[in-house]
Image (tube, rainbow, N blue to C red; front, side):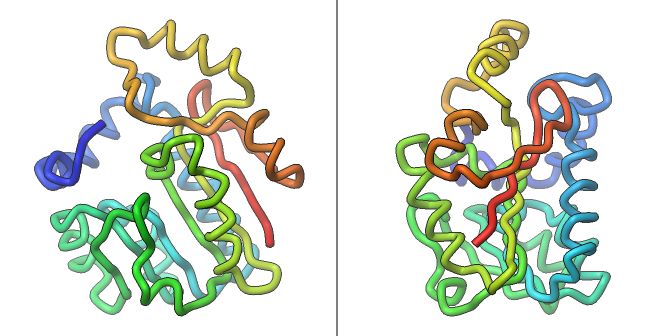
Amino acid sequence: MLDKFGFDLWAEDYDKTVEISESEDEYPFAGYKGVLAYIYDAVRKMKAKKVLDIGFGTAILSKKLYDDGLEIHGQDFSKNMLDIALQKMPKAKLYEGDFAKALDKNILNEKYDAILATYSIHHIVDAEKKDFLMRLISLLNDDGKIFIGDVSFLDKKSLESCREKSKDYWDDDEHYIVYESIKKDFPNAIFKKISFCSGVLILEK
């Protein structure tokens, strides 16, 4: 898994890397555009006004919502990613910091209609995911929703199948969502499968 320095170096070429992986229908980014499109449509349909983006990266998704007039808040641990995002969304409230360790105090002082996390939650180890997701749920307004789009699987069998298929470049340092495991702690969670290695997890308050 890349550290902060690695993501700073990757920032300029990140979108190109994603595009190549998705176009070849390969792990880890197969279904990437479908994941973002699903979340974008869902957020617009719920008429959210205030959005928190966890690990916004180069702001591909949040920029579209920003252009639609939504208020964007976010946190990312890469300074270079943050600079790119601010160039696209100068009025957004974006903070630098490792969300796996702590959310910025400015973020914790707000409530949100929708919270997004695309290809970022896998940086949080499985043992800490429940507490992190509960913390995010506490930041939702009434009727708010969390949308987590990432490398993710319906069950462990699907994950192991993908691991075997992609063993030459599988990242053992990333911690992917498995829906059957998440449902044990969040029985009302919904999972929308997008590709063989991607999907959107939806949580409500």
